[in-house]
Length: 260
Image 1: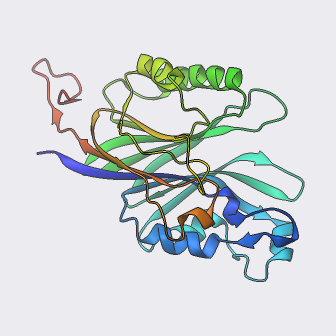
Image 2 (image 1 turned 90 degrees about the vertical axis):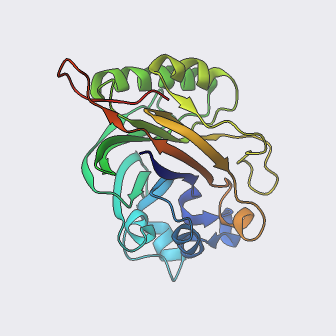
């Protein structure tokens, strides 16, 4: 019997909309929106751990790190820093309805002008071990290609070939490069037209993606209208997968997911 896994990836733009003195604090509205996703896994990018200037500017800046603030009741929050700046730091986060077994971080910075990284968590989902990588790749295409190659090396080094795997995040990429590079690691994604996520007010490009191995893609959607264009410069991407049952091999080796 297969089990459904609902995954969201969302670049929250540090919980603030706009720049300068007219910027608005949206982290509270983002929290309300996230609580209605009904997702098993929520993969977030540009999440503040702290920011002293913004905490001084906004009267209602959360007293706890944004990952903890955004986690719905009953979810575990895992955060790792990608970038340290003058006033604070930010990175990737995972909010999980399922138990978190371990987590770690890998620096993916390709040059000194962009600090990037990946968050790797191992979870227990429907009784199975599932690995989740939350990524945020660079703005320069040559950097993204090198980061995708590093990502594939990381997967080969850290994650067993038979282990179910999800890779989600803001890839800053909308072309065939993703499928070409990630396909070498056996990863596939939900494909559906009309899923542009950026810019949120007039979405033209799908920069956000969820790739999987050992799970079968089922559905992809992007919520539109209402408050969504006001919360961040990205729209969230919602993907659903079937977690394939493990099939024990006859020779006694480790069980592997059933064929998709």
